Length: 534
Ligand SMILES: Cc1cc2nc3c(=O)[nH]c(=O)nc-3n(C[C@H](O)[C@H](O)[C@H](O)COP(=O)(O)OP(=O)(O)OC[C@H]3O[C@@H](n4cnc5c(N)ncnc54)[C@H](O)[C@@H]3O)c2cc1C
View (cartoon, protein in one colour):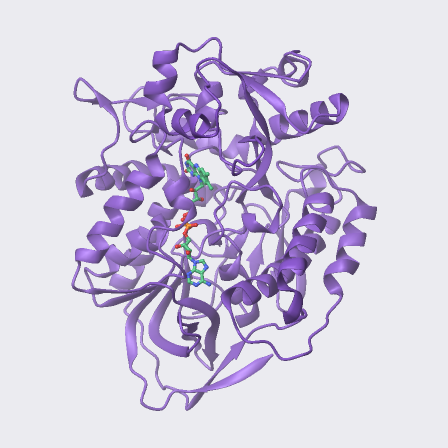
């Protein structure tokens, strides 16, 4: 539905940032060097995927590692769909951005004055910096949040839910937000930066916190900005699978340090699936784990840490050690029960290399955005970097190209969906997650995808709901599921994280990206960048 919002008496802010993960906080801090910034976030400042990131942030800081090697690894992981020019930006500008984080005060782990770097799956070199062992995201988020709070040019509004983007003749004019009391508040800005993160909550098992409900993707699409690569969802192969414990990530670095995957019968299975065994690409490990679970009839496999000393486990993975211990599992003595979980959305709002979207005055960065760096599969530890690099690009662009509307319309449009029965929100959420997990998960096929498509098309819009974030998030997830299903059906091949049991081979004719425009899907050659007329 579309509502009209009056602009009478409203101020147009210079910059509005939506989201407070690494992308939103960092971009806000940079933009505050130019002008005042308003940042809204739907819960507290530090509730984000960023805060839960464990493994680290990848950058080729010192020879003999190099941006060229990092480029090669990223392109290989992306399975033919990375945009080369975007990857070049990521790996070449990444080291400077990481050094900037160090200058801002992020305490990356070091020994004898040198940064400690870890090697993760599919990286050809040890280039992953981490902080407090496996609490990298929390450390980054704490530093950036503290700086943002202390910055007089940044106005922070917590518990502000972005409900719809405000649109008019010149593009995006800001956002219609819902505050804690349920009041609708229009916020206008010359430039709106969407940094609202991913959508792991579409699935029953996910490493993502509850805020990851794909709002940014849905808002951008309804407002007219194209989305790209939505069929590519990364499932992390190893999330804790214990009764009553949350779906807590067990970072890849544990396998990097020597953790071995065994099925519940004690058999080490990864060497039979891939030459890199436990360090094979994530999609291969996730599928192999799923197949072993099916074979043994178990709902998990085991991550055996017996090759790691108790000292190493406690020192290198303090967060994982303590969390497992709090659920009665001592990982210095026992294997960890693990299963795959939805982890990262490779697709997102299509952007150019300056973070500009297809909707004038709207920018996007971080997990919600898709400048083309991850292709069909993200290389581990590239996403924190992606948020920084493209956040900085937005800042640099706006510094050189100040934006202002020629005219402010008297009314703006806000578009959102209300298509489920508000009396059964929780039941509908559960049904949505069950359907997406069963049919749009690690292994897909035509029949299941079509079944899910029918399910997600059913609409029961009455009676009129009270607008709450939980209800609106459900509407966003349904829209996103429909778009993801359409792309997953169209891509009749397997590539990267998208695996079709009925089309298990990679098809060279499919080196193309699927773009969702408001009028329908279109294909784009993988090496072709987005260019927008504004
Ligand atoms: C458990 C876990 C471990 C990970 N480990 C790593 C790692 O080691 N290295 C790595 O590179 N990546 C890792 N990732 C991925 C990485 O953390 C994310 O991709 C990255 O942090 C995304 O940052 P972001 O700023 O784009 O989004 P987020 O950090 O998710 O922030 C999004 C923000 O938007 C807000 N928001 C959302 N919707 C709305 C709305 N409607 N209105 C207002 N605000 C809204 C949210 O509340 C949140 O503040 C991990 C992810 C998880 C979940």
